[in-house]
Image (cartoon, rainbow, N blue to C red; front, side, top):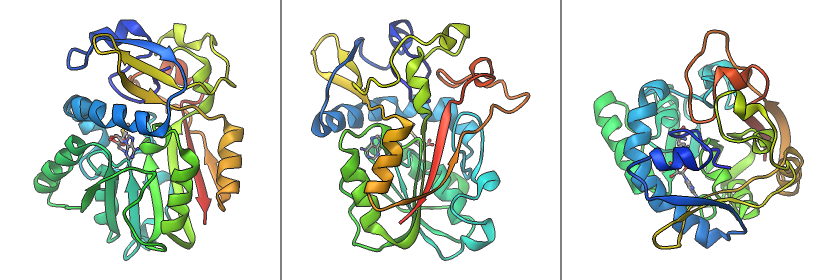
Length: 288
Ligand SMILES: C[S@@+](CC[C@H](N)C(=O)[O-])C[C@H]1O[C@@H](n2cnc3c(N)ncnc32)[C@H](O)[C@@H]1O
């Protein structure tokens, strides 16, 4: 299943509608870390312009949204109360155009963004200039964070890298390494239960058709070249608990945002139709 909150779909019909991207076929198969990165970096480079033009206004140039439900950091305060953010060193992994980091910077945090996609980071520079709130960003991957040990008070990711990496143990170990003792790690992902359903925002997307326990990655293969063009990795809720615990984290919160009354925006497979019945986003908070 293609679950990223993107142009929106799971399934071949919608894959074909995305003109900027190559024609692909969908498979479930094992994909390692190197292949995941080789596919997803260029994929996000191609898709970045469309992503920002479709979702940029909803995200807000200086806004911190945790998922398609529109829930905000202002509401959840997972990284601490707004008044306590000033002076905190905070890393955003899979930052895209770094809207969330900009929201933190506007509250006095020393936020920095990291992303695999150069094009996403060019959008970040564009928004820095337009908004007057600038955040430093760096190209990189969640599995090799280019920072010394104990660099940050918090690391977070809003639908960023975590469901795109194969070597999730390494990504979690890297996060733990760069966090100071007691530092916060907060991240949102597609709610693991969503992997049972087709990525369809209509009623059709409410009929379970795939095993929740099948961790075989969702893969799109370029029809012309046969190369893997896009990958997402699935872990169950139990997997996340075990990963965080064995990575040295203590789990503090798991938020499952309810679909807000009157919110009718469709984002990929996320919609009020499905949001009324099933959670679409899971947000973890853990401490190092
Ligand atoms: C759904 S977007 C979310 C971006 C941003 N957090 C937002 O809310 O708009 C996912 C981002 O993760 C990035 N990404 C994918 N794999 C990554 C990896 N291994 N390391 C770092 N970033 C990655 C993509 O390039 C993309 O910008």
